Length: 391
Image (cartoon, rainbow, N blue to C red):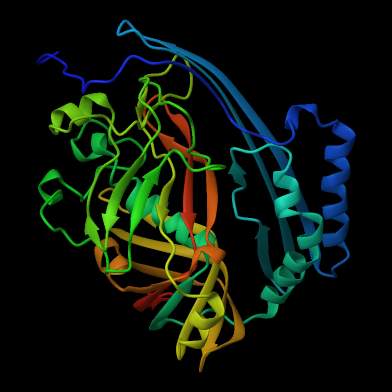
């Protein structure tokens, strides 16, 4: 060691926290689970042109005890449930996929009730029909246009271009595996640095009911809390643990230290990093857009190791002409630079469209640890964005 480790203070706590759930997913019979998936599978298979249907149900429970020499003793039982289905269409030399409720699965800190809320069987036919329609859809045009992202894609955008760069261990150079470092260096804090437009407000909130990044206490015994990340477009705060909070002179940790298990070192992980709702309905947002693209559901992502330059692909897009949705396009992509991209955001949909999406596969560290993170988001509009394959 090159010096003494200083930790931000924390109160001694004796407590127990347990995820509130309606129905224990581990009490549901295998027959009921298989029946649910098979009903969705059969609905999708009724659509001509569908070659493969995949579905999954997942449940995860962690029981942990935290005890410290500072006097804390905390028990937690965290329960998470997830589900996903994909319909793959093949024809004319093309392969196209549609996913529901999100690509790469969607999880929440809930029980079996998640299957009722997202209802795979009643959405299976729709996504299968969309997958088949994509086979004959024209290629997404290239150019510069107005872009509207659905909530799922906005959530992924938050994860990659906000969640990772606000991890203070990355900023300080203490961690760089998998996701690199960060452009949000410490000189940008409390300096009025503009991360986005005035309508961009973001928080990291581990207290939200149902969020995949929701818990009672982190793995240093720090209570779950809400942190302002971006206020009216201005960068406002980092994700911290006790050590990095002390290094930055902050009065307390942000409660973001989590480990994959007892045999791994706890490190800063995202909680629920959210774009707060705006005022628009989706119908009004589309009607207010003269010309552009509406992109749905992530398909691919790429971002540099400073979290600045990115390109993302989506499963499908719809043309927007004179305030109405038009033709479907396949293989849509868009690209940008993080502060300029969020600076171009001029509208965010309201709370009726806001969903707390769950990402159960965030990798970080060596040995790699899988983090479970949440991202609340609603559809949002961005101006003057490069789309399609640019020459």
